[in-house]
Image (cartoon, rainbow, N blue to C red):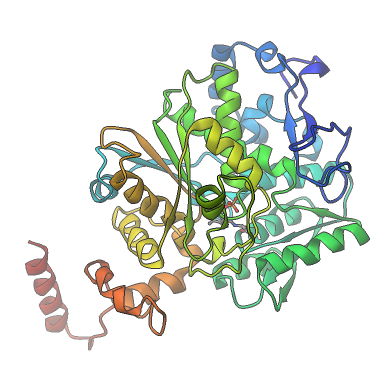
Length: 453
Ligand code: F0G
């Protein structure tokens, strides 16, 4: 499927720590020599031998008008920068192709002149996971697996279940009992996954899954799978295309298991090597302060080690205490000169409502990006004249419980944030229950009109 047939240009696998280069990956996607993660890389000179930047750019743009399913996918459209997977095994829901929105109110509240958001929640299963899942699920199909599996905080599982169903594979989901949103759980049920709610947290689900793949012929679809990272790279490529290949000064992403930040950073570095972009945006990573092992690793230990923690945050998608891809994320953070920040539960809730008030909306984990941007602006890392893109990772409707509780004013009831929750009052729009009476509705309308001037 490459536009250049030379096999030397094909991406190869390598261990991120010891550099070992296996021909293929084992079922746990870990290096057999040292146990660390694997990544794809292009051998020296392979990227520049591929094609000149302007040829690639026009090829990718032309594919937007194609009727071919793989060209219509916002992932497979960029296949020259992905490892080879045969087209007959490709499973696509036309993922990617997500919008880039102006965020004027959020820009104002963060203190920047212009703010954009790339909404990865506009993918087929409503989160950024689809871009990696189309690619990794296709790899499972190519390798002939009957079963695929993942541990998840809800979005990976929803996405995996959908792609497995489309590819006629069975899927096994391990999720922490009671700690994922109903929206996400309902997706994996409807897409036909065998869904196990385990009495543990996400990190506990990962431990069980790692054991399971050693004993049973199931294909691991967590983001330690390097095919996931390759697919997720395309969000950054598509973003640059949307910006006419003029990179922003900053890109801001949430950090959970750290696969997404690794993928976006990897894409930026490869695009820079390939001269598709002429400078690197700074990639900054934001965590919730109740689930901040990466923030602490960078701030307290200079990135030399990470201490696993018991994570807790209402942004359940990033309720992760032992992120698998932290070393990959650290590398791209350092290579792009980005920053790491942590934000509180109240800051996340306020930022989420502000993103909603711009007519866009997102799930709580995505809102850490705006909350983090505010801090990065206050600290002077982001200047008001600089261009910033937030990556919104999940759709507003993924977690309606959080949103409804926020607007009713009881999101923080009984928590240690309860006393601070008045800060968010000005953004709350609780539903008003009235008699079916025109006068009562008009009275509300007039009161609201008075308040708005
Ligand atoms: N935002 C959302 C909406 C997520 O679902 C996740 C991760 C992240 C951000 C963090 O991305 O892990 O690549 O750093 N969700 C995973 C899941 C863990 O199982 O759905 P990350």
